[in-house]
Length: 324
Image 1: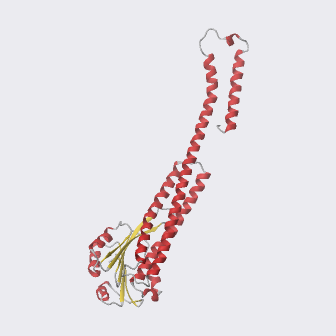
Image 2 (image 1 turned 135 degrees about the vertical axis):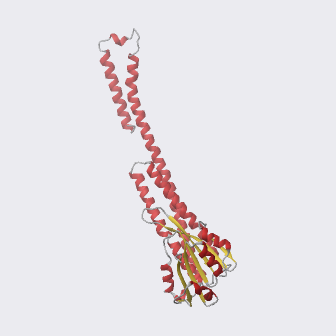
Image 3 (image 1 turned 90 degrees about the horizontal axis):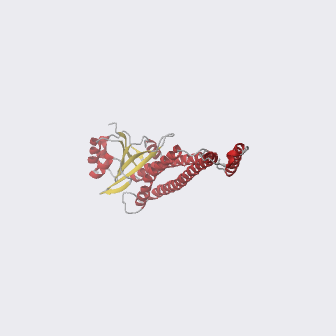
């Protein structure tokens, strides 16, 4: 079936040749071997077949089929069920998330991938080059895939941090506008998505490190501490970037407010310049019979001169104070 990406079996860390799906039942009965199967967006029939073959729980199969699950770890009898969110970003596109579901048993690991276009073929090949580690069993295979998923977060978070730096430069070099605010909110939403995907990984790694999960051997647990350290670093990077982004958003709003105040000052300054001659014209435009200046020979040019001098003085003062 097209949903089956890979099907392999290992003995003492060495891959067995020509393993088919029909051989799985026989291989599962041999304690010195383990099976590693990868599925990509399988249909109901294939998942039902896998459930019968590996003895998987109904609820876990339902989650693996529906996808859109929160990262989590659950134990169903003698099977470990883990859900992780994968992340990738191509160019200037938005961050896209996928899911990988793990079923881990004493001698098998089944991965179900949804959404992500990144295959785990390279991870499998790298593990096969280290048979002395792969012979540790499904626990090491689980570590290898989880480590690959977690490492995918580093370049994504770095790209988001670079975008934040560009936004900072844009805010201080260019005039604040609505587009910049939209970009900040878009970046905040992407960081929030990464945060929601990374935070549960801390609890998942904690459980895998502890001794209450028998499916993870004692010699494999130290490898999950490495994933835990990476997860903590990513979580801290996301938190610091979000805090800085919040500060950038506040600065952007402050600059917008300052820009609006500058516009208001200019309006007020020009209004004052227009208001002075309007007031003087209004006074001498009243229809009173007796206005002393009307009978003075130099009254008209004197009023014009006074009006001009007043406007020039106000313009100089407003210009000096930065209102114009």
